[in-house]
Image 1 (spheres, helix red, strand yellow):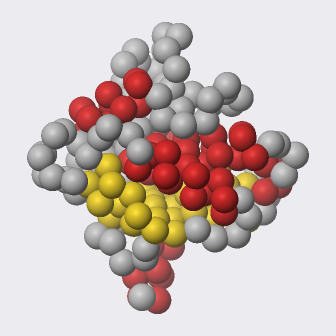
Image 2: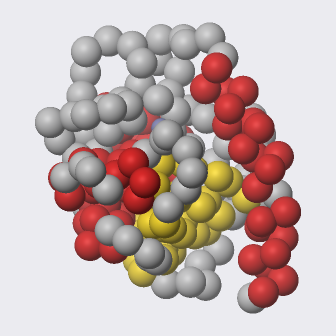
Length: 183
Ligand SMILES: [Zn+2]
């Protein structure tokens, strides 16, 4: 397992650069995907294992559960040996962001990745409510599934940045997931 973890860290820098480039790119209406995805065959369940660590673990569990509850092919369970996995890390990062998602071992168009690390920053979320912490946890999980920010229109989406009045995946997010991981 240590070898796998090491390989995942080594890929982090490349993936981070790709995330940054994507977020600075032109915003296109209805372009709600980051370009990669977990491996999935239409008609099958997409089994996502997840792990929790550090701070805000109740919110990490609640966020993972909220994705599991969606009417999609996404099936989320807490474990550490899945083919496809999202791992939460609630720790202090010396930056201004609330959360950050990094895919491994690749990122972007055509990439079929196996893991996503979801960092929740206690430096910035420390002064926020549990409601917002869960929002960020669900938002980052959505990135891990392959969803980009929702920057157009007025529809509800967990992939909107900043403060929201809801903290679970919305209809638009479910539609996007069902497009990315078809029945
Ligand atoms: Zn985001």
